[in-house]
Image 1 (cartoon, rainbow, N blue to C red):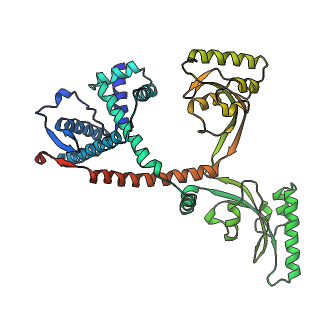
Image 2: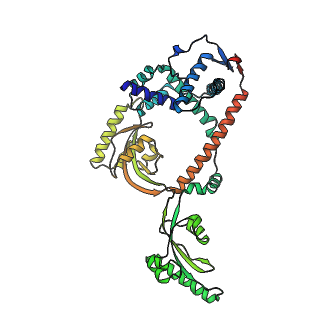
Image 3: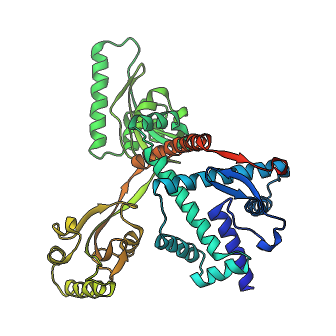
Length: 438
């Protein structure tokens, strides 16, 4: 039962990771017939056996997803073309020096195993029991990582998104970004009769200003509205109820956009008089509240002289001294290998989620104010970290702009990637063989 579970996990994993991979869902021995060259791609070739294996993999994936299969000859052409494009990308990577080292590949494979609750040995066993060759799996995974890195270098890193593009995107997609946003406004009207003399208008304006001052000094809006407002909702405390932006009175639409929850507007002039509105509440709002962390750390880097074990021992000793009463800042200045923060006593300032590497962020999240972590490792070395403060901040504007920027980057990336793939395909020498078999 456990082995069957592992097999199902591995199959789902392989399809997710490699997409149209060269991993076959059946044993290689099931591919019969004399092998032959099916296509020449520059200085490389694609063999018929490779195509047949890929066909089996793709067919299995489509069936598992419940996707209707196209006619065999159509599917075969599509699969072969994908193989040609993949091979061309690997060739470009080789020419431009894009590599994935064995250590990087090992980390990726270990991460995949760990994320599926398996040890590396269990993961390898699962793959091999499913009829796959683990060495081929590793190389296919390496190729996919190479292609990803190549596209990052050739396409994604060259894409720029201006602030003006972000502004335009937000403006055009405003309703979509706002979602089901609704406002609850409270309203006070100081009316002005039609064709009033200037002094009457001035008197009403002054009354509105005095009312606003009273509200900002802490007076209850509902009570003030009930006593001074000439509006239809005065006896309900001026409450206009929940409304979408499109349902607000036109004169309130723009002022309401500038108000946060609890804010009160300046007097708004209209033919009927002077209005004061309060943003009593907002719901359905695209809002991002994040926790920022203030922390300081001591870093010990490993090298030929300082082993990982020695780094941990040194940090444990420093942690004991800090807990015993010695100043963190003083020890950081004297011992930390992060010279940029060491001169500030190890201070990192306020950090937002995603600004530090995941291992470091995970340690910070687990600590309360004043707590010091046990020694832990990141790609930079070994650390101890102390959290000195946490606060919640409204990150909505930055969140919205980042969301818009990512959407633009994704669109541009897809367009640029397709153009780049067409270009390397057009520049390549591709010779199809045995056309009757396609």
